[in-house]
Image 1 (cartoon, one colour):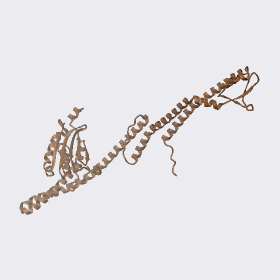
Image 2 (cartoon, one colour; image 1 turned 90 degrees about the vertical axis):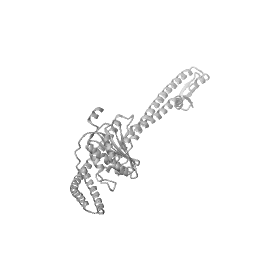
Image 3 (cartoon, helix red, strand yellow; image 1 turned 90 degrees about the horizontal axis):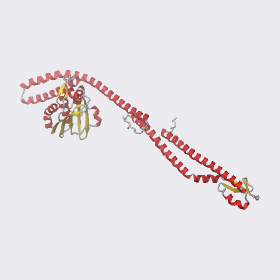
Image 4 (cartoon, helix red, strand yellow; image 1 turned 135 degrees about the vertical axis):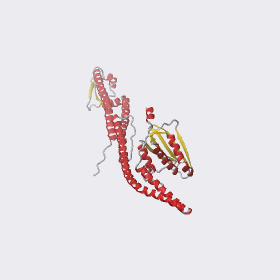
Length: 418
């Protein structure tokens, strides 16, 4: 059986505050009217007593004007009806009854401004009740919305509160901290799973590469020996075999580099020198692909701390990827500049960008969108940068993609900034 839905907190607060407003307004107005009514009744009785005392000493024809002063609080009744008597000196008797309705009507008319003020106060109290109920329940509604979003698997942060009770602000801050911690924990779990997966792949890659590299080397030697005693026509076939062997050897070398990266030899590295070397090494590839390569080094860009050879491999892999991302030609921009966390090296292309569904997998080994690719270039980049204590990020759109590598500066530069 479905549980009946109870009143919301906002409805309860509105009902409570409106009941308090109605009660307070009714008490104030009722007290004022009751007190005024009793005073007027007392004044009417005093007037009646004074009139009766005065009429006892006057003749009937002289009391008529005096009796008119009793209106409207007193009304004359027939002789057979009950009422209070007034006798004149010559024996005339007239009966009068207290007209409470007339007294109340006159009182309401006299106190009309009080009633209007009470009505305005009631309306203001109702508006305040609605406003207070909204201001008190809005943070709770936002919190409930955030919990619902989290339950649906969407990460959200609650907006900052203003003019809210401290307890609700603390609750919102605690919720945002919980979301941050959960995101960090999820990222940690993803990274741990990725490292475990990469370790297993690395072991397999190392074993396969080791077994394949030696036969490839023997094949390369035999091809070189066969080339000496064959005709030029057959030499062309041997050249094709040689290039394929070299390509396989390069793939195996990449596997070994990924599986067993060398120990970095740290030292100060000039970012401009790395960019210049990368420009020279990729010049022929850029010309063949109709790519214009630009190099931008920030003035007085400090040295970074790392292994020059490994960092050259990082920039080379990123640049070759940028060239292959623009089969129709374009520009590749290499940049080196200061960053709040060290020194940044970036590679920007003008390709069509990376699809959003592939962004989480671009650094996984053996993942590639190119038929001729091995899927190890970005994996090697990620591993080298991580080994240097840096980070690599990607910013992509239909207008192009930028890979940014942030590396620590030299110790002397870090001390200077401090």
